[in-house]
Amino acid sequence: PTNHLDLDACLWLENWLRKYPGTLLFISHDRDFMDRVATHLVHFDQKQLVLYTGNYSAFERQRAERLAQQQASFERQQARIAEIQRFIDRFKAKATKARQAQSRVKALERMEKIAPAHVDSPFSFEFPVADKVSNPLLSIRHGVAGHGDVPILKNINVTLLPGTRVGLLGPNGAGKSTFMDALRGTGTLLSGERTCGEHLAIGYFAQHQLESLDLDASPFLHLQRLAPTASEQKVRDFLGGFDFHGDEALAPIRSFSGGEKARVALAVIAWQKPNLLLLDEPTNHLDLEMRQALTMALQNFEGAIVVVSHDRHLLRNTVDEFWLVCDGAVGEYEGDLEDYERWLAERRKDEESPPRREVAEGQEKSVNTAGAATLTADERKARKRQEAELRQKLSPWRKKQGTLETRMEQLQQKLATMEQNLADPGLYDDQQKVRLKELLAEQTELKRELEDVEAEWLEVSETVENLEAELAG
Image (spheres, rainbow, N blue to C red):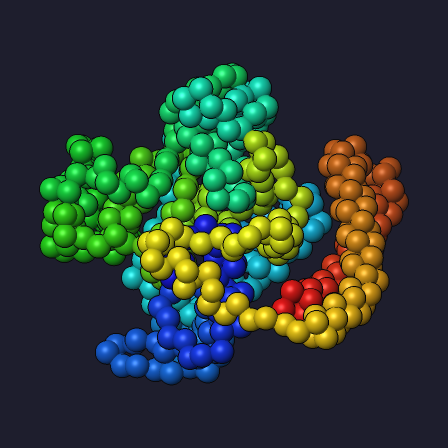
């Protein structure tokens, strides 16, 4: 049900279904959607149906335990865990915003735990490193983007460096795709200066690209045309990572499903070694295992990424920062996805109807009226009183959360200064031994305090999230 819905509509649908009193049976490739809506999960595994109690995350934990009992699976699990841990360490080293940093580390550590459930995935690929990289890769100054003579976004000032990882947020129709096209240089940039690095190589993915694939060509031929001198074995090995093996790699893609065509398009992008990935809803039509493999590949990609996606798991685990496209502007967004969900809910309060995909005229009435429960005046008063009590309870926790975030930022700044001091070669001369020892002891103490504050922040944030969920429910 979430295919072709933007994030705003996905969140509304989730909340509506959670309140739905009937029985629900659904198929989805969106893990966050399943986590919030499902109470049981049926896994189709080797022609058997296996019922699990709990949501998708609970299923992953139980399945990981089963697979770990097999030695070969266990070894692959350990290798995958080590890979994600390296990514966590790399992210921690350059994180700047406490709120986003802690939210991201928490998500990555959760991903580290669930990775073992996917060791038997048929997909394993990466985006190879580009031969040459420019710094910066791309910048737009004083940009105006739109269609025809109609501007949609104004005063665009952005710079993409190697290693930049951006998730684009914004309501449907705000101009996210227009902005992506401006980055690509395909005509939506009406004015302003777009400067490309000498070695800029863009890999672009969008749903309409699937239509431009040669339906009479095979996955093998799509890659061979790009590199006629590549050996047959090299092309086959590369396609194997996208689960195109044997005759399937040589079959015309005309009869392929949407997911298979999307895999061909991603393989074509990866084969060309880009250093900037512009991805517009890359997970549509992809199943869960392929989404997981794409998330892993993006984690290990060393270039820059700008991605629009309604897949929150992908966003949490692949981007370092968010930009908000809204009200004719593109700007940095300071919060995380949970903050964005609350922001969307506030914006919707005055709207007459919830966001939804386009439906036929005859169906519209049933979509709008389903579940429209009415409350009596007394019930409304009781609810308002309960909400007021929750807000009062929430206030001190939010204040504490803010205080801890400020302290974390202070400690991170102190540690950064400390690391600069410790990088001074003169500090390691014999006459500086005492000073070096003092600085190292101070660094250890700062790290210990930061760990304590981070742990307390996570506990407080969990309480805030629970109270906010209670308030929203």
